[in-house]
Image 1: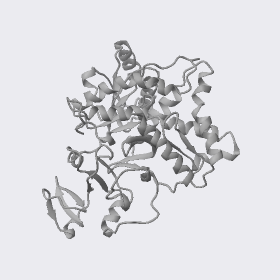
Image 2: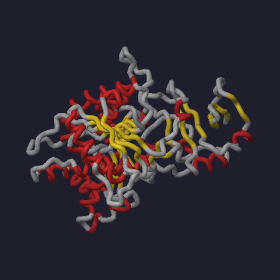
Image 3: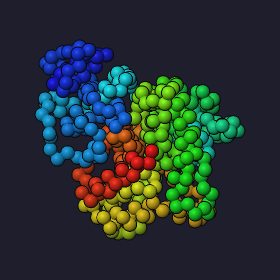
Image 4: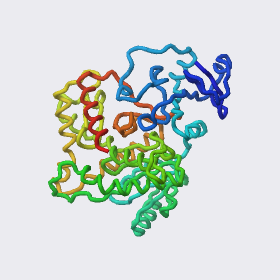
Length: 414
């Protein structure tokens, strides 16, 4: 193994980088900060950086859904001090095939986040309300932008006038934005949505109906993020989140000739927030039957917010029949709300949006779609100072087959 110092950070690799300053292992072992493990992987099929949760993920040869599977044993031999650093969440995998890979060495997550929300419709407005009420400890400001200037002014007035009875002076600052300022933040939240079917329409998968229109809009903002050299999180709440994430990633990484140069948004910067409400809906239906109540503590949700969703009743004792029934109920829950004559946006805006975003910036476990091997796949994860940390579990073979089927479905769409 080779050891280097770059930008006062410790780097390790299993092959030599002639341009880097080499140091001895004895000197490297004394380093107490974040460690960066260097890899060389196809940037179209691998993340720029992520948190290494197991020694088997230290020097990956490729990214697959096996990243969600807890390794049963170690396949590489590493020094004990590096193993201890991995166990302490102090190791970041860093893909040097990205032209801007060294930016990861100097990036720091903010103590208090500046979050800008784009699109102040039903979802955007509800999401903002949740962030305003619950985010005072971690959010410095909420920026608002909508093409309808009256909506902008309305939410600036309304949100600025939400204050707790104890007159807390540390309330979140509300800022009205121009489009040119939307990427002056730590997290950009895309809530723009066009082509939402009216209540009573016969569409079975509303999210796919919205993709064509929403993709055009998100591509515009992805290009703008590239122009602004945006370093924060590009969060997608509009449907279909997983497919829009991929569209944003691809568009932001094209040069003026339409060629992929990977100088735009890094894959780990883009996150889709749609799976949180599916987990919440699964919990709701699971509590209706004694046979599925265990989902609350043992179950997991995977995949997209719609067709391809997988609800596992338990990751400890997976039951395919119970899981399939829960998946069906969860997937059609939005149709039940629509049958009442209303659009189902409150639970998605809060469970997938506000609460999941707050969990993200607090480094807590939550559900969101992240980049795995070129595709954005929803699963449980958390954002640590060392990077994205995917939850790994001992997945049942039948469940893993279903996950791979959904993964292929999402991979083939764009």
